[in-house]
Image 1 (tube, rainbow, N blue to C red):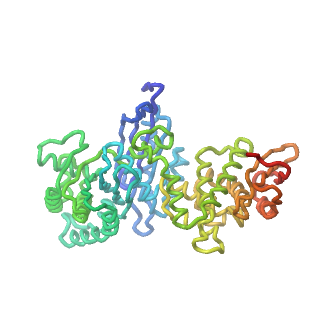
Image 2: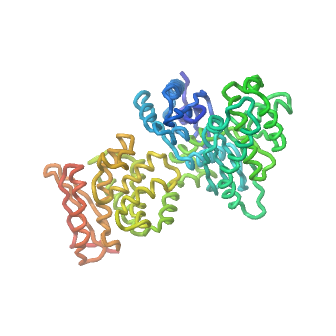
Length: 537
């Protein structure tokens, strides 16, 4: 059993990918702050293997993944990890039974796997690369070629300028476009044209965010690109450098490798040093994706970074736990800045939303450990929902709470998992009209019982917060709650902002909105307007 120093923290990060399941176990030194990887685990499970008729993950693939995740758990436990953070990407995102698979993992292993969007995947890859390479405020293009998707990122060490995730991956395209061995000229050129077409939009967007005179450096991550670097090194140097971090090769050499690899059979490729059978099956497509991306971007060389999504998960955890104060500190507020960006995009009245958010958080804090046991994570989700609850007005005033749900759900919020985004969207959706019901599709999309309970218990607080700013003029200055268990009452003492304001509309609105609170908590809500005293400045 490994001993852990008091000031050290051990964290495991698992990437449930289309091709492989990877885990890193990191020793975090908060005093520096920094982390070192003390263990790695990888299993090529091909979770992206799907039923050709339904598109669902196959039973065999899910069993392979479950076995791999159990091994990861056992290793993490043996190393005294305080937490395992697992994320799932494109294979699970797109499969009709993807969420059911995650529920099965939770039920069988007790492991919660966070489903993340393509953009969120790209953001965490960016964090991982930032932790391994000094950008010196100069632009870098990052490419990560996975089994199901390819991420392209442009950043200079601050906020990423562009984040994209395109549905072209080495496993996906091999399954869809390659049936000959060696690959025929027809299939190769068809594949090449498809890859170019799929990449063009992301490349155009990235190039549009380069400033005049900037010459970016290109960074490659992922198993595909590392394998190509190993093949290049063996050919050029006669040995495999270890580590690969910082190793570079040129586009001209990559083109030669593509020509050589496409002319070989899969069995012949599997005989190459450093290329196992699983990688040999998909390396031609992976190499072609990289070649076309570099060509479209006009990049003549690429440099390897061995840190990627898994390490980005570790960095993101360190940021959210306040363990990073250096050059990456700016990244820690990404969730808040992303919410405010969406609010601006949909022309939310921010002053009203901030008042609602303040009331919602005040009610949350005053009922914490009294009526509910939710913590900081759920508090932040409530804040986000309060800021965005009215964004549906951007579409239409009628049923705007339902429009808010869809705008939040598909608004590409960064820093959140798919489950957290779903929770925020549901909280906003239930700030008015009917209470959460199983027949509602939005509510059914909350696959976790815990998140459903959270929405049930916190959406009534958001309803009350909205009522407290009914006229949207800040009529109520503050609210103070008192719980009286003997009478089954929860009294709200309201302090008006203006002396003599009866706040009739706010009181009426509270009366209309209180039912959800009373049903959820089994209490009678009693609002009381304080009319005798005001704060004196």
